Image 1 (cartoon, rainbow, N blue to C red):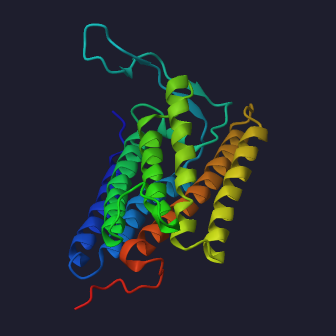
Image 2 (image 1 turned 90 degrees about the vertical axis):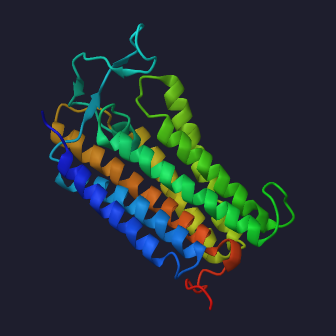
Image 3 (image 1 turned 90 degrees about the horizontal axis):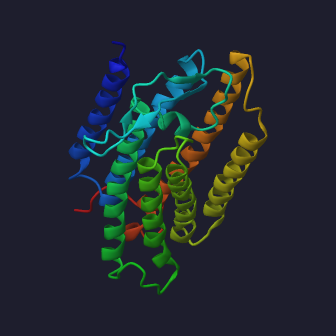
Length: 275
C-alpha cells in the first residue's frame, strides 16, 4: 500500500516544534506576539507543503474520487470504491480542487490549518475587545470594525475548510466560494486597524489585484490539452499565483492580529511583556 508518511511526518515535526517554541515564549512576550507567530507558523508550514509539491511533482492534472453513502451504515459519505477518475488532459486551476480529493492528506491539512487559525483569531478578537472594553458589533469608531472583520474571516476559513471544492457537488462548491468571499471581505480589517494608512491601502489593493488577476487567468487559460506537460505547466502556474494571493492574505491577517488590541494599531509595538 502506497502512503505519504514521509510528508506527514515532516509536517508534524515542523508544526509541533513551532508550537513548542510558542509555548516557550508564551510567558515572555505579549498575547499579540504569540497569536501572530501562531498564525504565521500554522499557515507557512502548510504553505511549504504546496511549494514542495509544485517544485517536485512531475505531473499535475485532474483526479476525482467518487463518493457514496451506504444506506445501512453510518450516514456519512465515503469513497465509493469505484475506479478513480484520472483526467490527464484536464488542468487543475486551484489549491482547493486538489484539496477536495477525498483520501488525500491535502484535504486533512486544509481542515487542520483553517481550524487552528480560527482558534487563534477568536482569541485575538477577545483580546482586542477586552482591551477596548467593548463588545463585538458595538460600533463607535473605525477600530470596532477590526473584530467584525476578523470574525468574518473566521466564517470564511471555516467554510473553505469544511466545504471541499470537489466540483461535483454544487452545495459544497457554493459553500466553499462563500468562504473565499468572506476571507476577502474580512481582510479589510487590515485597513481599519491601521486607520487606512498608505501601507494598509497598498496591501488591500495588492490582495484584491491578485484575486482579480487569478480569477481572470483561470477563466481564460486552456482547461484541456492532450499534452500532459502543458496541463502541468498551466496547473502549476494557476496554483502558484493562488499561493501568492493567499500569502498576502496571511500577511494581512498576521499584521492585523499583531496591531490590534493593546498595540492600538502600532505595528512596531514591543513584542515583550513589560516588567
